[in-house]
Length: 352
Image (tube, rainbow, N blue to C red):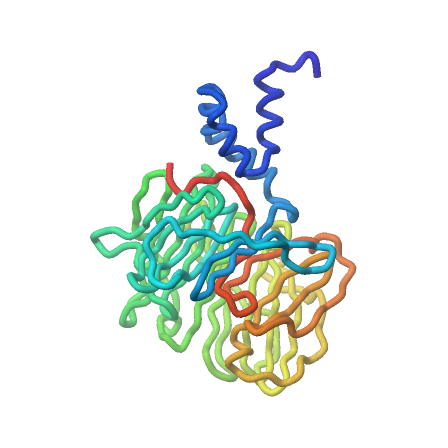
C-alpha cells in the first residue's frame, strides 16, 4: 500500500462510499470535486454500488413519495424517508416506466412528458421536445432504458399512433432524439397487443408482446443496443388455454422470465434464455383463483433465494429455492398498492 500514489488510494476509497457521501465529499476541495465529477469515477462507483445492500424501494401514492431500505433478515422495509419531487407534478401523478443504475425513466401523467430522474441526487432531465418527442401514452407506448458500449445512457421509445409505429432513441451524450428503423408485423401495432417495458440484459433490450385474449399470439422482441437491430424470438412454450403474461428479469446478466398462464387458476413457471431458446428452471403450484384485475398486476421480487409473487394488494405466495445467483431484488412497476420501483443508490447523472 505504501507504494501506491495518494491519488490512487483516495480514488479507491471514494469509489466505495455511499452515493450521498460522495455528494458531500465534493465540497471538501476543488481537487475532490473535479475527481468525483469525472465519468471514470462515476462509472466505477456505479459498478461498486450495484449490490443488494444498496438497494432501496421507492413508493408513490396520492399523498407522498417515500424511499425505504430493505431489511433482508425478515423480508421487510426499514424506516421510510420522504422524497420531494424536484419537478412540477399534480398529486404525485408520476409513473415509473424503467430504471437502470440508479436512474429512473418516469412519465408525468398530466403532461405525458418523459423525464430521467436520479432520486438519490435529486437531479433530473426533461426529455420532451417542441417537435413532440419524449411524450408517452400509457397502454400504447413502450420504454426501455439502457447503456451502450460507449457508456452512453439511452432511452428507447416505441410509439404506436393510429396504426403507425415509430421507434426513437434518446442519447444522454448528445441530448437529442433520433428515429431508427423497425420493421415488424403489422398486427403488433394494434392496441390488442400489450408491450412490456424493456428489460436490459447482456447488451440487449427485451420486450414481451402479448395479445390481450385467450389463445393469442405472444412473442419477445429483442433490440441489440449497439447494432440497433431488432429481432423476434419465440415465447416459452406455455399452455395457450388461458391468458398469458410474461415478466422479464435480469439475473446477473442472464435473462429470465416468469410466465403466468391460466384463467381460474394460474400456473407460474420460471424460464431462462439460452441463445434464442427458453429452458424451464422451475414450476410453481397453481395459485388459488383471483380476480382478473388483480391477476394483471402480478409482480415479484427475490431475497435470500426465495421468490415472492405478489399482486398490488399484497404477497400471494413464496417459492423457496436454493439458488445463490438469485439473492437480490429486482424492479417492479407496481409494488404493494403503490407505484414504485426497486432501485440502486448511485451518483449517475441524467444529463452530461
